[in-house]
Image (cartoon, rainbow, N blue to C red; front, side, top):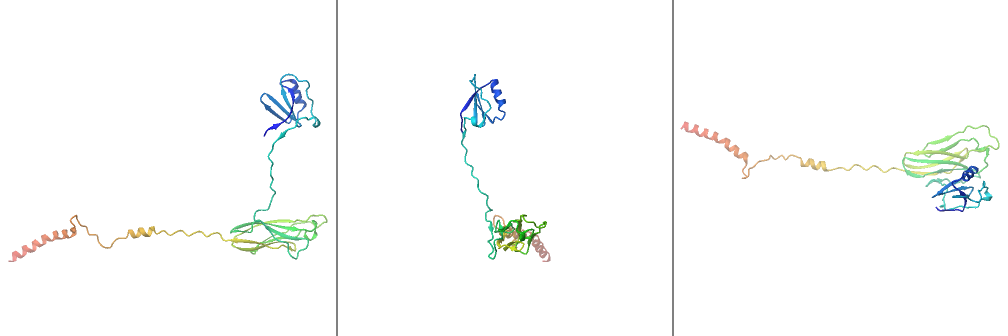
Length: 259
């Protein structure tokens, strides 16, 4: 961003320039612009020049600053802190007086296992209320489990502030709907409801029929394979006929001998 300022001349290089820096050890910033050097002290700018000047400036005071700097800066937006998205706080109990307890959950629904951070708080009443000094705090998670804290305290004295904020975290392993409360001494909060759903069941692996098809293709045909030649004549029949010829000749010879 551009910076606009007026300057007071200083000779440079010169002994006077060095004396000026010695007299102003808290010089804030130096800017080198080409062959010139600008020194900024307490909002005033001094520019080096060649040659001599009529007067060497002495140590500055805020009242003597003549130059002002205008620097363009982008505005910075600061977002206020807030509770986590989905946080829910219990309502004030119907029978409560000016002092009561609440419980806040940072998330109230999700799949198991669900991690929830809780904050129990004492609202209202005096900060040195003896009834809530050094008492047990308990988070009941609605599934039969609870978390308690018993502080170690000295005897109560007027003016000693009581503890108002308590925290706990819990993992809900099983699906279900849970009523979670916070209790400090005799003051119990209204519940917040935590809904835990089951994680999606893993899909069963698909059964492939490729193996069955391949097995069917590899089955052996019980009918024996009969090999034929290019003329279509059964070779096994031909071989059987050739083997019977010698036997037939022998039978004919025996009959002729008997005749």
